Image 1 (cartoon, rainbow, N blue to C red):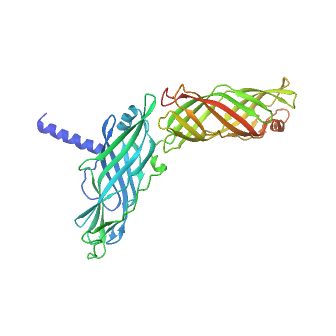
Image 2 (cartoon, rainbow, N blue to C red):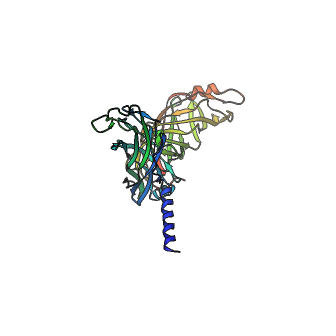
Image 3 (spheres, rainbow, N blue to C red):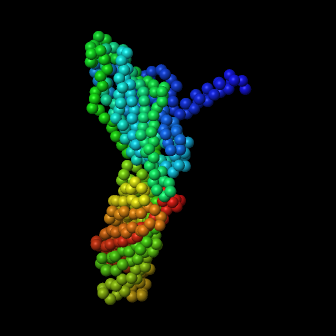
Length: 427
């Protein structure tokens, strides 16, 4: 292969790489209306520098009268993490990231130029997907710009910096790394050019400078809805817990029912704290013994049938070794079976259960997230609804409702981590 051919091949490769990185190779001004531009910054990640394209978009008017404020609408900055970068970060243990993005626009008109340095746009605590390209739209507000004279006003994307913090799980601890991103020379370009209409002899806004930028405008913080755009809605960090020594005290009967070891498998969607959490509880059926009417012994089995996923909020501490669970709500039907009164079977049928779910809302609890740590005690008060579907040869709903249903019941359980991102990982 000749030297000239090799140079041409390298040039094609560089052009293709820039295109893949999202760098616009066109220098022609963008038309007014919806406009977009990509500027690429280099981010110094712990495993090495990597290009991160930032898509910039806004809506501009077709023209604007000279001497009147012009304000772009729907301004958004979207950092794009390539599939390769996501995999690289994941292989380094990164699970979440946060920080801020600081774009700089430059306004040109009649030979004058003025920078608009937007205040940093917050990047909320965001979970990194397992794979695939990841886009994170962030909304902000550009302050109004007033231009006198004639011609056009041009908006350039001139610089893009970012200060990020990645969170990685290493050696059973959550490690935070600071990451700086900055665009290099030649990465920016024109976003839009808006013609000025009106009297071409209109006075300039301030002395010889035709450009005036309204001060005091701040960037709008991105909403959580914008932050999770494109993020799989059911994805998060998986935590599994052993549920031991589960005990329910039935107020009316003055007796306890003890359940064997169960599991609570949960997912925490790590966004801005407190994070959303959902999960499923499984407990084996429990045998109960109680005395009714002060002398009649009754035995039965009780089973909890979960009604939909449990939901709540979680605040994970910075070390990721403990978390506080709040607003946890569990809904489950209580089903009775194998009922015997003074040793004589009572045919309650296969569908003897509470007519509506028992709603259990445990008190706020701090749990350990590292396997082998001491268990946390979970406590809750709950009400047992009336029963329905009890009895084959006769209706026993009123009997069980009268004996069991009502408020003032208590539940306690021990919660210890079984699997987590700190290891062993949950399947």
